[in-house]
Image (cartoon, rainbow, N blue to C red; front, top):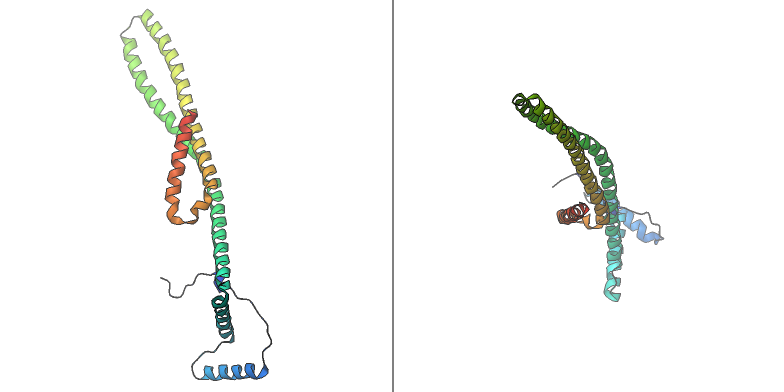
Length: 213
């Protein structure tokens, strides 16, 4: 735990106030404060006023049962929560933009990897075709080549469809995750709930993506 580093807090913000106090009282206090300083003590007017105000609020609470200090502290806490939520929202929007740029590169990389896999598979098949052709007579070889040409064209169409469908599925998942994150963003106020919410979102996304098939 930090010994000197302190986090800023709404509760520590101060406001200048002005009030009229009897001259004899304020003079006595100032003299007492100066004497306290000479003797190694601190007697601060702001601290005294703040403690006196707290005591006055406490007395009213005991009399009427309404704690105005708690009301103000609750307001500050809510402001802090709203601020954290807004910061989280901005961070999410920023991450979505960064992710969109990253995804474009990811999609291109995915296409390259698919194409490499398809090409490797094609090379293996070409080697098999060569062996088969060497064992056939000219007429059968011609028929085999025509058959393989049609199969290759069909396979290339299937390869393109695979890439297209995969990209569509990934984009849909990203879109759904963004929508559901924004919808459930208030549930992220508590860090311990984050994993639970994300898991629920993932389940919903998988269900919707599968329904799109």
